[in-house]
Image (tube, rainbow, N blue to C red; front, side, top):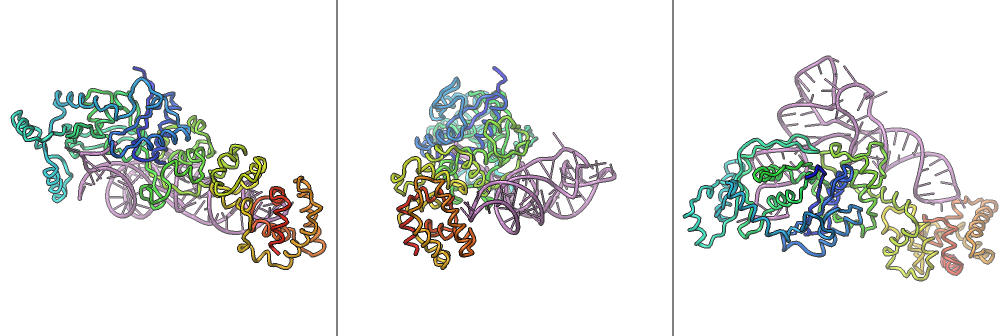
Length: 479
RNA sequence: GCCCCCAUCGUCUAGAGGCCUAGGACAACACCCUUUCACGGUGUAGACAGGGAUUCGAAUUCCCUUGGGGGUACCA
């Protein structure tokens, strides 16, 4: 056995890859990368009813899109497979039996009603609920009798009462009084393992050395350590990350909008920006430079420096960051990504060259790709709605600018962007000298008439893309 | 109810006893740049939850309170 660090991400395919899971995956990935370790993907699909193939695929796709590639997993294989829990059902009973044989576990025939009653009693007495161990000392005869009645037993782990201490990678020393835990079920009466049992067996068999996960698992940790110890296995290191909270400080959920990585992508967030942003939730760069690739982050990553508190997921910074990535992106690639957001329009009327030009001149203020649909609408819609710019268009000076422009349009060379640029300059100069108009107002008049907006892309390029016919038509329509 | 975790500007964070009259980023606001809009630049405002204790000295250590989060399942 080597000392190589092995970490894993173990999502359950009962939903699309959650942004929180993505962050956990990222931190595991970074840790493995930094230490030269291995990153394993395991699918925890024991809950057959809630799991689906589509969700599984979404998890694969999202992880890949984020650049979190795994060394071992269901699709790529590895030496510790299978990597889907549903294919591992036969290995858990063996270990459960082993624990029974060694006296670490026992069969429990209690009914739900009995268990409920115990629990109610505990709450009534202001006590922590701990299983009564009613079935701990059942004789073989009693068990046979119960079994004859058709009651199928679950298997409970016999919790040793002691103070359990472990050193958490991010939180430091954590202490638990195991007498408060109670003998918990490791095998359900239907023969399937519970989560706490299955993870331990899987992590043990897969040789996982470090378990980095959300702090919602802290209270599972002592149970799992107890199982490792009973099994005589080496206990891995644990590290618990703070949670990601919605702005209202509750768990990020569907009612807050996007929660899955694929939701964000659909809204026009780039996976590079997403992963960068999410890394900053809990981790901060030593050089203060926040825009970084996953590789750069990995080089600078130290698990002990990760913040142990929760963080609120706010869109402001994500939007800014996404905008930064949009600005840096190559135009052809960006055009490919933007086209789907223009699906409502007939984009076929433009050449690829002009489409790329549209992308190039409208990308600046974009924060989310989907905004392109609004920002570039005037390139695709035949008729321009002037409601928003009525005030500008209806000014006498604007009318004058528009009229004069129409009259001189024949002198413009619409094949030459440079010429258009110069003609606009002439226009500004003319109105400044003859009418005392500010350059700003001259431009606004044209922009309003041509786009229905008071803000937008560079005018010369806009005019070039629109072409003479449309320019003339729109100017006339504005009068 | 019981157990556990957490606590610095609105948000993400830097800060591991003196370097802190607490630094950065986003957002806000102001100004500048610019032939419009945007980008960009400069600047302003903005926080150590409260109370004790330890110490010559505390954002940093300890305790209490408060607040937030998580768990408490034969879900994962």
